[in-house]
Amino acid sequence: MKKQWWHDKVAYQIYPKSFCDSNGDGIGDLQGIISKLDYLKELGVDILWLSPIYCSPLADQGYDISDYYNIDPRFGTMQDMDELLAEAKKRDMYILMDLVVNHCSDEHEWFQKACQDPDGKYGKYFYIEDVKDGKLPCNWRSYFGGSVWDKLPGHENKYYYHAFHKKQPDLNWENPQVREEIYQMINWWLDKGLAGFRIDAIINIKKVLPWRDFVVDQPEGLSHISNMLKEATGVGEFLGEMRDRTFKPHNAFTVGEVFNEKPEELADFIGDDGYFSTKFDFSTTIFGGSPKGWYDRKKITAEDYKHCCFESQKKSEGIGFLSNIIENHDEPRGVSHYLPDGEVNDTGKKMLATLQFFLKGLPFLYQGQEIGMENYPFQSIEEVDDISTLDEYQLARNAGLTPEEAIKAVGCMSRDNARTPFQWNAGTNAGFTSGTPWLHVNPNYKQINLASQKNDPDSVYSYYRSLISLRKNEKYRETIVHGRLTPVWEDHHNLMAFYRTGPKQTLLVIANYQKDSQTVTLEHDVQNVLINNCSDLKLHDRTLLLEGYQAVVLELSV
Ligand code: GLC
Ligand code: CA
Image 1 (cartoon, rainbow, N blue to C red):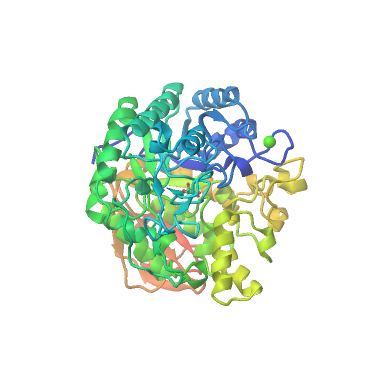
Image 2 (spheres, rainbow, N blue to C red):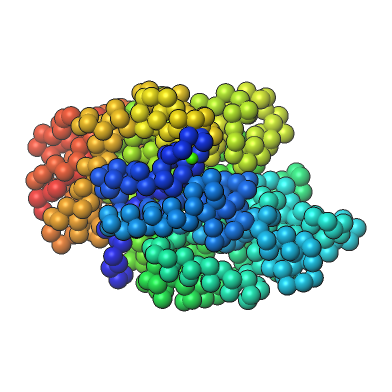
């Protein structure tokens, strides 16, 4: 595997709508982000990924783009964007935008024109089919519920395809003109000085054609899209072309949101000449999913977490470099999801952070993760904005859950958990806005906020800072970034441990992933303690007693 400039970096995802509001309209914006660049720099972050800020009706919070070449006025202007690029550059920081090209918005000019003239040029930008006797072209279920087919506005017998919401019509990648439009747009942004992109939902660009039904997997008679994706072949032709026409000539950094790729294709995706620089490891986030819906999910345990992480490490070893996360804007807060109820405390939060930073890969923080932000305590569906949660709530209700049971079952998975405003301080609206925030602030903001953690050496924030600075420490960098990862004591219940071996040293990472203490016997002497999330290290000879959720990183004498 070739070494790349970005391997030793730290990345951070900003969800602009909820990060910082500069003008009091309750919506975070580009000037808000600019005002926090110094904060992010001080934290040690190098690469910033911005969730979409293009013009959008915000039906799916910007993942429905109506103009790829302009900034939505709610987020600012193109001048603000240019300012952000320039200010980031001054600080040696890199900006990534979100590339959402599986679909656009139904309010995009292309779709509007397609509705006016489905047989004309723009009709071919989408998947539009004639429907006779109400028989849809296929029985696939869209990700946000219901059929992938909806009536083309203004036409009785024509339907268009959308893998996500009906306001997100899929672009027809089989049409070379569409691909040209997309490459042109990508190059336009890269020429402006973007470092690259996070690439949204990209596996969906290739469909099994001609349309046909797949196995019905739920009583409503539809089939999950993943059934189709398993049989779709040829996505690589599109992705290779996109890489060669855009990313490669710009030496751009790209991180793919890739689900459902075929295992043997990993090298094609993130190998040395892959379609993307890296992809997110979603093995822990997708764990326990049920075709019935969130209400039927299996909760992930410490053992599951360990196996997911090690499995991903093994699969990518020598092939490519993963991007590691504990949360993002589509997931619950990692600390609430991966720590058992009642055990979400600072020690546990720091343990998860340690694992994320010492697994091999590029760590991506999500805004608020660095202060240990937690899930929102949803009491009723009225508090929910996210379209996906609304659908999942309905599924739970249809399955017979009461409203109380349903909100309890889906609230903990809601995408809104991560979308509540960043908690800057204990003041009004957690310092996010002087107006009314578009989404409620988590009521725990008086206890959990940046201002109270910034100068506290024991805070979650300070812990993240020390993890980041260790990753950049000249002495250990090579081992932390590129060192071989070898799991150890895998059968040891609720213990996740591994060696990282580099040319200069061997590190041992140990996490006691439970509330009770436990002991391990080390195979080597300890030379140095690099990280410890508890105040003590109870080491006698080679016997180490770990407190509940204690995590340590030890430099060994080998
Ligand atoms: C990705 C995004 C998600 C969005 C979906 C459709 O999964 O992360 O937020 O809803 O794609 O664009
Ligand atoms: Ca604003």
